[in-house]
Image (cartoon, rainbow, N blue to C red; front, side, top):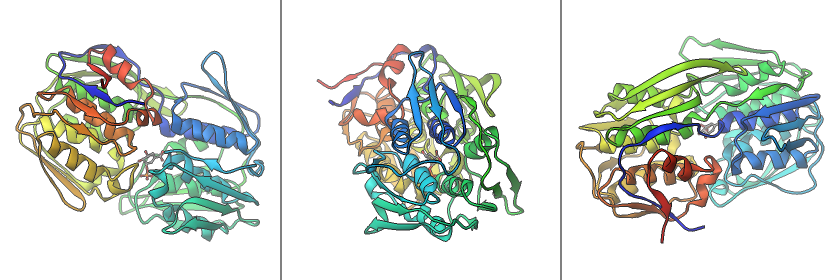
Length: 442
Ligand code: S3P
């Protein structure tokens, strides 16, 4: 697939609905497959990452089916009811698919092999294997604990109490999913609260989950094993992490006003909203409503003069996927923005810290990178642009630089547009519908 380029644009306006939440979509399919009966999902994100999970669940013997009306139906096999896959499960680009399904397979008494693309095959999986080994699973991994990985699921799973060494909703969820097919109480303690979609959805499907705050600001999540989960309806809200791109684009393009309807606003996901408001953004949160245990709203975004701020490490878990586009907002803000506590960004779909620093500098932005921080001196004026950026198989790097290209002197192109389909199919069409100018490179 050719690259895409974005050119300086006029005002953005109109109403758009971003596709469904990626994290919630993976979880809805997985819990549907582990339930008894039928789960009907409205608004599932049909992106490559989520389809990797759906395909894998079908190979495990569940049935996840796309209906003509756009809904998905999942016929589950019950907790512990999945059967041995006939081949290797290809997780594509998706860390969430890989780590969550490793959790599921850790307590299924057979071998499951996972592979991934070049990006995913470099990402650390040991962080998920450590607790899953304690539960009785065994692993054969490539050097460095990377994919391809074969999981030999525990014959007699052991419940554990596991304290996460890093803030990771994927590792937390891997342990909880393994805990579903384990007798007794499985407990995860997290140093800082991370997205709690799993906890909410487990409760929605009938599991007993107790969530408590710890004295030092973390959370303790306990799950009673071997529940009978029953199929449920799930309505997936729009993905806040996808909404972040048109949101920042509208803030930066003068005289813009857009409405992003039905976006998930789980407070453990909306760190970018708080940060942008602190930077002086005009973003209204309207029509709050509840969807299958999650909160959603319409976000009304107007162009705003942003000012630089310091974003502390404590903000990172609630906006971990939004730093690339925040760095773009910072590049156009008046003054210095300092983003701290970003070590986890180095092990995402790409080294996002390095990719942002390099790409912003190439586009003419004054930026300093350290091991775990990024400092951007915006100047409040347009940057030259006129560069091609490597996407590094990273959808969010690709989209962030396309947003920057709407506000630079000359266009910005990205070398690989296909990667955007991991999380945001239809990105260019949605942006252009609001008035952006994003098209295939000649
Ligand atoms: C996710 C958790 C986060 C996030 C990822 C989705 C999830 O990863 O970056 O895009 O759905 O649980 P980590 O758990 O590695 O922080």
